[in-house]
Structure formats: C-alpha cells, structure tokens
Image 1: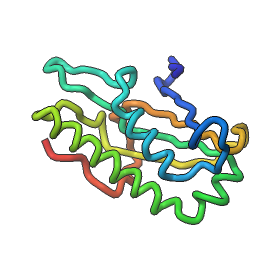
Image 2: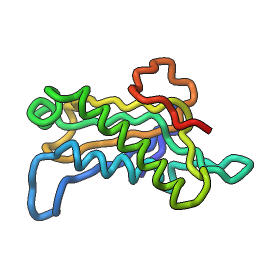
Image 3: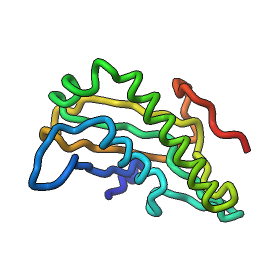
Image 4: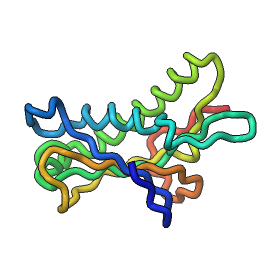
Length: 145
C-alpha cells in the first residue's frame, strides 16, 4: 500500500482468484477487498476514546474492458450492494467487539471508474477518510451513534 501525501489516498491492487488461473474481475471480488481495506490497520485512525475511524470514501478503478463487460450495465446496483456490504461489515465488526469500535469518517461514498492504464483483471481501490464529502449520493445513511 502506498500513501499519497497530497490528499491521503491509500491504494491497493487486487487480483481475482488464484495467481495461476486468470479470470475476469467480478463485483464480488471487489466487495471482499473493500471490506478488508476499510478495516485494515494502516487505513484506520484512532480518536481520544480509542474508537477507530475508518475510510468512508472509496474509488474502485477497473480496466476499461472489464468495466464495459462486467460493471457498466449494473454500476448503480453494484455500488449500492458494495455500500450495503461495507455498512453491514462495520455493524458485524462492532457487534463482535461488543461496542462501537469502528466508525465511518463521514458519509459513505463509493465511486466506480474505468481506468485506461490498468491491465485486464486487476483493479485498484483507493480509500481515504473524507469528512468533507459534499456529494451525498450514498443510498444509505450512517449508522446512528
């Protein structure tokens, strides 16, 4: 993972399936990676009460070919499902801790884009804590305190 010091995006490349068996990237592959990246120790900040603030702004970049064949037609639906999955993942993680340990850094926002520089199959996920998101396109509200 690398940190861009200009705007604090963290990035992660994901590859579907096994390294010796190439298959197209699918939305489910990205879903698992989003959940893992959200709670990754390197992406989390702690507040005064040791509550963990997790990234709330994600950009998923996929190869143009994968985007047009597996994502473009169902983009809104997939983003809503990813949104639901991330919120559920936080709720389950907090439930396992017995307290509200993880909190989003602001309203949840997920973007999906075609990237011309990526090879077929891998995807890049960018994540950051962004309390200043002004585009409130997230279909679900934040969990209540």
